[in-house]
Image (cartoon, rainbow, N blue to C red):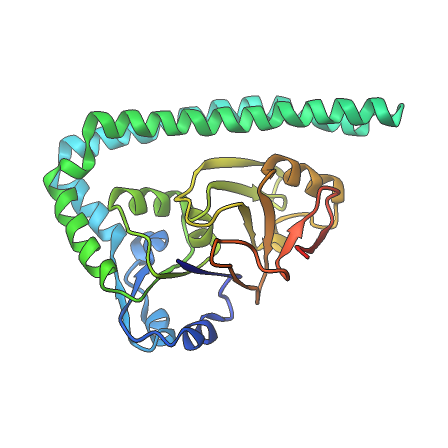
Amino acid sequence: MRAFVLGPQRRPTLGPVVGALDLAAPVSTVTAGWEEREPDDTELDALLGGRSRNLRLHARWQDVLARDPAYADAERQYRAALREHRALYQLRLDAALRGLREVTRYDGDDAVRSAARTDAEAVVRLVDEQHLARVREARASFEDTWRPGERDAVAEHRSAVSHLAGSASALVVTGGNVEVLLHVLRLFAVPAPPAVIAWSAGAMALTERVLLFHDRTPYSPSDAEFLDSGVGWLRGCVLLPHARRRLRTDDPVRMAELAARAAPARCVVLDDGVRLDLGSHGELPPDARVVAGDGHIGEVA
């Protein structure tokens, strides 16, 4: 699978990528992250030369919920359980990060502090990994109990999505609500395409782990947190869209904290105008901007 990851599309850069690929067949699109605005894809279709076929995953999801009340109720309970997992994770994460930051600020022997920081980073990573494991367990339990793919409404839509996506030359995944994107991509078992172009939340959903982050909230910085495992088509990276707008990228201590939590994956900065053509095995190109272990941003090479 060829993969192209773009920066935010406030000023679209999609056109040149599509032109370079010379796509002949229709292009499947996922705009489900826009939720109720999913059908508002006129501009996107124009950038794709009028060849887009929207998979309508959000509308399909709402149709499933309307036609299968028992499943809809079970899904509401499942999502409520996920919110509880997240709330408890945030409590544990706050304590672990406070410990890490106190160690980082400690004024003492450098070697002693460095060893303590390594231990404190391991504690934070353990909290992150345990949360992701709990979320995976909750999802597996829900799917084992309710077997969505065997329910009539879901099976009907999965068949339609498989047909549409299977005959497309590429898949385009836009931004929006990453939690919704993850859910519908899984619910309707969207197959891996020959080529994928994604940006913002759409690109995040395709990675192995989805990190939510924002240092510039109206009240105070919020701790970055791992939301869930991603689809896994893009490997070895944790994506940071809108990084310079949302993160204190000029604070190397803060950025080093993110790099340590993402390791061994690389934190990849996706600002406006960025285009990453991933290698045949998903490797990052040499000019990708990543966060180094010391918190500074530089190219992979």
